[in-house]
Image (cartoon, rainbow over all chains, first blue to last red; front, side, top):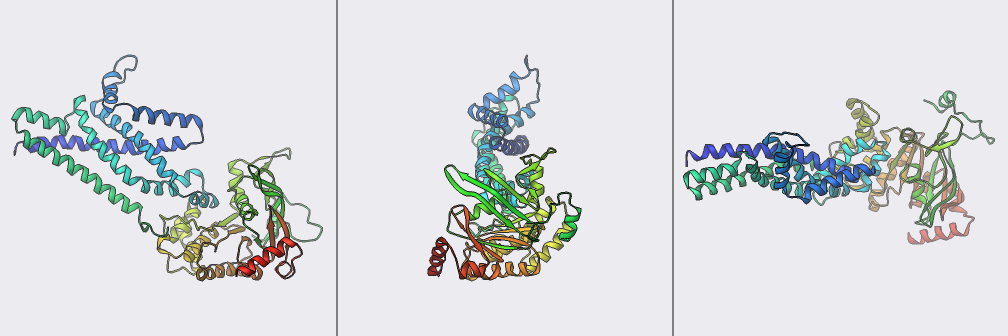
Length: 219
Length: 279
C-alpha cells in the first residue's frame, strides 16, 4: 500500500490540474455563452446557440477523440497536446451546460437592478460587470457547483487520450498488483476528497459574493 | 454654475418667454406612449421650470409613472419630444436642424441631468450603503474613490445615515434603504430629481423619515423635482404645482391651494373625495 500511494497521488495531481484549468475555461465559456444567447445581436445569438447545442448534444468522449485524433489530420492539421485537449474538451463541454445555468441566473436578476443602473447612467458594460454579474454568479453557484463536480468526475475519460490521471493510475496499478479492493477504494476516496474541495471552494466564493445578503431577507 | 452663466455660455439659448418666466428645464411636447392599443400618455404637454416642485397625482393607470419613466429613458415614447434643459432627450438635431433618434452617447449625456428614486428602492444588494452611493460617481463620472467616498459620506449624513455607511441593504429598514437610494441619485448631481411613489412600499411610520429628507432637499437645494405620489398631504405642503393625471393627460393642474381647495373638474373632485374617504 505504501508504494501505491505516491503513484495514485501523481494521478490525482493530473486530475486536479485538468479540473482546475478546465473549470476556469468552463466558467468563462458559461458567462460568454450566456451573454451571447442574451445578445440583441442575432449572429452572436446563433453562434452561442450552436456552441451550446453542439457541445451539450454530443458525447464528451467523442469530443475528446475529435480534438485529439481528428484535428491533427487533414484538412485541419491542428495538433494539441493531450493535456490541452483534456482542458479544452472538458471546459467547452461543461461550459455549454454552464451557459444555460448562467443565462437563467442573469435572467433572475431583478429588472429594478437594470433600471437603477440605467438611471445612474452606467454603460451596458459597467452595468453587467459591476451590478448584474456579481448577482448572477451568486445565483449560479448551487447549480454551478454541481457542474464542476461533474467536470471533475468526467476527467476519468482523459485516460483514453493517453493521460495518466487518477483513473488511469488505478487501473494500471490494479493490473500490476491485483490489490483491486484497496486501489479502487483509495480511488473513490481521492475523488470524493477532490469533490469536497470543490464544494468548499464554492461555498467560500458564495460567502464572499453573498456578503451582507441575508438569505430570504429584505433585499 | 449659476443658471445665468449656463445660459450665457450656451449656444442653444432661446428667446426668453413672453411671460418672463424662466426657460423650462423639462418640457414634454405632445408626447404619446402606447402599449398596443392602450394609450398611456396621450399627446401630453408639460413644462417644468428650474427649481419647481411638481407633484403628480391621479388614479392608477393614468400614466403618472410612465411620465417619469419616459423622462428617465426607461420607456421609449411613440410620438412627441421630451426636452431637458433645452435639448431633446430621445432625439438629436442634425446639422440641418432636423431631429433624428438619439444615439446612445447623446442619450447618456442628457440622461446625466436626471436622477430617479424608485418605489422599490432598487439598491444594489451586494454593496453596502456607501458603495451604493459611490458606484456611479466612480464608474460613470470617473471620480476618484477618495473624493466619491467623501461626498458619499456627506450625502449619507444629509439623509441621516452617517452611522450606516457599512450596512448592506438587507440590514437596513425600508425607510433607510430609500434614503440611501436618494443619496445615491443625488451623488450624480442631477438637475432634475424624479420620485416615483417613493413611499408606497413603506410602512406608514417609515414614510415620514423619507418625506422629511425630500422636504429638506427641497428647502436646501434649488433642485427641480417631479414627484408621483399618493401622499396628498405631502403634495399639498411641498409642491409648487400639482398635476392631476387622467387617461394619459393632465386633466387639471394648479397650485396645491387651487387643486386641493377648489378643484374645477368633476374627475378631480371625484378622485380627491375618494382619496379623502380612504384616509
